Picture 1 (tube, protein in one colour):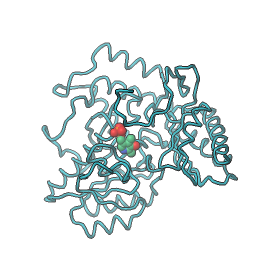
Picture 2 (cartoon, rainbow, N blue to C red):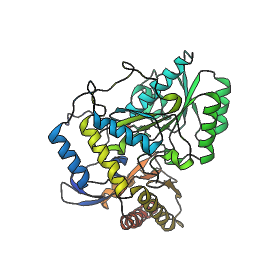
Picture 3 (cartoon, protein in one colour):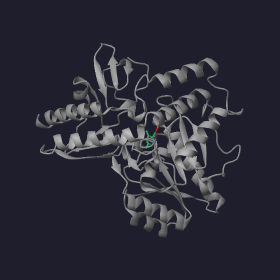
Picture 4 (cartoon, rainbow, N blue to C red):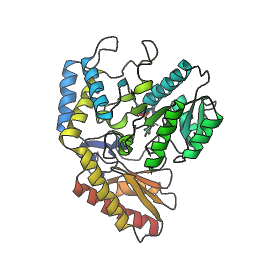
Length: 390
Ligand SMILES: *Cc1c(COP(=O)(O)O)cnc(C)c1O
């Protein structure tokens, strides 16, 4: 009996090492990694530049504390604001913490404007994390059930429905922010319409609300631009990042711009580990490799290869509802629950995931090659055919 608390339905496999997007288990079997640790291993496994940066940082300093200046954390903030067009960054260690910072910032902003009970508009099928505030913001009863009372101050609307956002705003004068994912990841790979996103931006401007983009899963270059919101030419007031930011080392970031910037002062928020030397060294190295190896363009190109490959191979297959996504965040919706595909994938040497019960989810590393993309599409299509015909 394991002494690890029973919070995951783990698959019966353990890995010993990896190289690029090939991972080997403890029995010596090799897998093609179509998931990269749920969008975490941005550069795949064992990238030499990331390994070197982590090793050399570990030999100097791992951590000193935010009681002191950290020039490297400042450099990472410079870099993130440069590529995002945002103004400033708070560092933490995970996606839910980045969203906690965003929620606190939005409430703080509300109080400063005289709103005593600030509310945030959130979306159906969203996912923002497992802490109390972020599970309350999340649009999934499964995530919330058993943990009531939920944190107050969230109003839910359907995703991609601008009228619903407008209608809440007209009725509820406590609204101070709208929070959404550009691509809903856990919710089943639903991409926000460009028109909808620009519409939300417009409503936020008209009403002086903050627009919060949770880019924890779809950010860091995955859609083919550094951030999903850049696909539509808007800039949010707050954006959150985590998963792929440091290529596998835990880190989170809450970015603020315009009227959301400059609000917090010492004492309002903090994190012991947030933005320490090890994490920021890994993040700087990861961002550097994404630029040097031209991985934004690669994500867009290889993503298209995978989606086209799957669309063609599955065109005449009854049971396949559709293939969707953008860049290297891809979903294949089936007409039935398909969680079993994950285990069938393991048997076949493929690491994939199923979310929202019926959606096969792919989140390969940004340096996935075109050949790996074709291979993944081909092998996965064969697996889905077999699954649907059995
Ligand atoms: C994974 C995820 C989170 C939560 O991140 P953790 O690091 O697990 O806390 C939040 N938002 C989105 C969109 C995510 O995909």
